[in-house]
Image 1: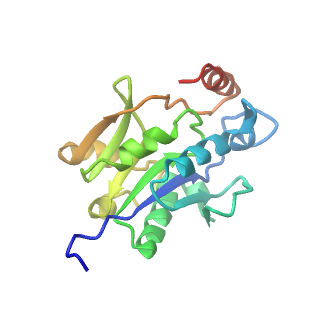
Image 2: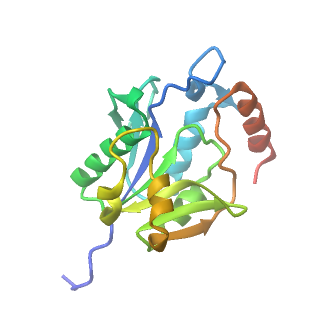
Length: 197
């Protein structure tokens, strides 16, 4: 025993529970294939590749064929909005003994592993990825900030980031926070993925 402080344990959380009601394709937006892979798989692969810690995927509306190395947490109340999924993730993070969670979204396939790593390495209570100066995902939320997260509704950490600027660091990242809400978004994201970094 060296007396060194124990290393903080970070849990990577991918929120993938929503209904995707604005998407007009033949399947749920997360299942739509872009540049050879389903949208959700791009997002998950980046979280896993980052190596920041165990990966938890909060699912809901769409059935995702998740690989064995990730943990699935189904949100039966996914219709209630993002806050409920985030609350479930925080509960599971406590069970894991995590000191922080890094949260990304399943519909943002152009957020790469390096963005997850850079945000996870931040030492502030709250950290948010920025892309050309614009805030996006992922977001790091330290355990001390978990009680301040919303308990319901369709907002995750955004209100907390706005309300406590003293706790927030911005982390410049490569990639794009473009999300897939419509068929047009899917085409735009495909162009970004094919173009590469």
